[in-house]
Image (tube, rainbow, N blue to C red; front, side):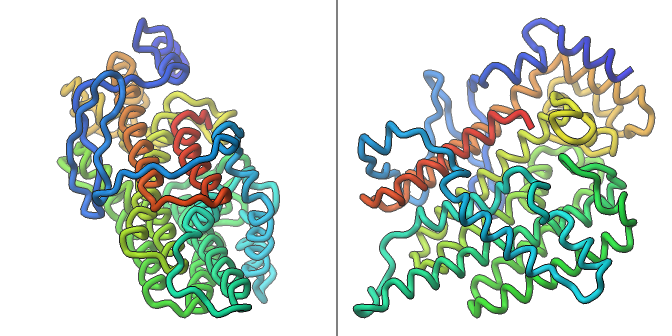
Length: 414
């Protein structure tokens, strides 16, 4: 039945879900976007087919680029490939446990080759280079290299810690959702059982705490502790929403910040703090992480309806089959209020899924979700473009790579 419905959606004129994947979004009118950690929305106009972006913190300076850097095609992942291997090796060493079963469970997602590309560590390592400017109080002669190395090692630790927190949240989410697949791999709870998967997640969080304590920076510890709090808060919001909250796009975006964007946002800010950057620069780093994280999740929402099981490494329609209401359904409900009754009943009945997909196919919901993701991607790029200028070629490359990642996030197909 799902296949027939998706087939009908894909052949619908002008509103084809497949067509929306292949053609870039063309935002029109006004749209609301998240701009603060209090999730307050502000509105900006879109005119002439291009977004007029708000100035972030009064800064709208574009970084200097030499012509050779502009012309060079950069792969963001290749720029930090060596460091990613180093981080991956350290992660495997950090999750060693005395109990073999626990060690095997904890290192499950850190085995080389399980994840093709680690998005979050890549963002953080690029951010570390992008902020390699204006370090206060230059060190005495002969000390600079040692200090720079120490800062970089501590920033690498943030990449490792954030990845452990991320994987721990995946393990716990899979248990709560009863999931049996992850992209390219079976879920740990399906392979080793819920109890061991739960303990593995707890173990990873404890190792992350040990790593944080070693940094001896209370502000950074507070930031990453807040991330864990947000993950718990976001999951609780998802599980305990009232009907009114369930139908609110504002509430959904707040929850998405807690569950997805907070980790990248606060980790980017931690990178800036360890580099000795100003509060203004740290906020720009945080804004980049927040907005790229929100864009990433919004595209995940789209792909759950438009992707295939093969491309996603999990079943398509996974969210709606688990009763999870995401942005495309919320936007479809705005266009077709009668969909509220179907969503209120839930999706235990497959017929309700078919009805929801029919309305989704008739709506502009997929395109509106893509447009919202694009706006957040543009805000992330604006944050990078607002950083203090630098003539350092490595800094310029890393900033370009961070901007490039915003486009990769919204154009990906898996």
